[in-house]
Every structure is written in structure tokens, then in C-alpha cells.
Image 1 (cartoon, helix red, strand yellow):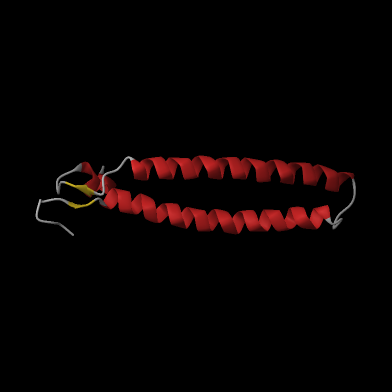
Image 2 (cartoon, helix red, strand yellow):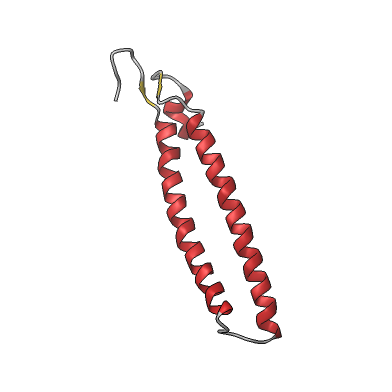
Length: 99
């Protein structure tokens, strides 16, 4: 884990990278479900004024989810990019879970 210069891999950066991938998988599963519902509605699975209201809310939720996903992706990417790959053994990143 360390090297000859006395630094260690940044565990905070690694944790953020790991959670970024997990979040992407969770988001992908959720958006697939919503997209499937929208496709069904587009094909006429439910037709009524209540269905119209539902469809409007569904498309708004899909848009909100996509916007939130873009924001989260940006946040993860910026956090990862702004963290060094290696840190001193006593750096805050080595014990960030205790902060």
C-alpha cells in the first residue's frame, strides 16, 4: 500500500471511485424501469385523463432523475479529479471515515 517515499494510496479517493460505480449501476437500474414505463405509455398501455396526468408526472420524474444523475456524476468526477492518488500516512484522507 505504501511506497519508498512514505506515501500511501488515497483511501478516500478509492472509496469515492467505488461508490461512483455503484451509484451508476443503481441509477441505470432505476432509469431502465422508468424508461420502460414511459415506452409502455407511449404505446398506449393506459389511455385516460388520469393516464395523461400520470404520463406528465412520469416524464417530469425522468427529467429530474437525469438532471440529478448528471449532477452526481459531475460531483463524483470532480471529487476524484481533485484528490491525489497518494497521500501521506497521516493525511485526513487516511482516516476520513472517523472525521
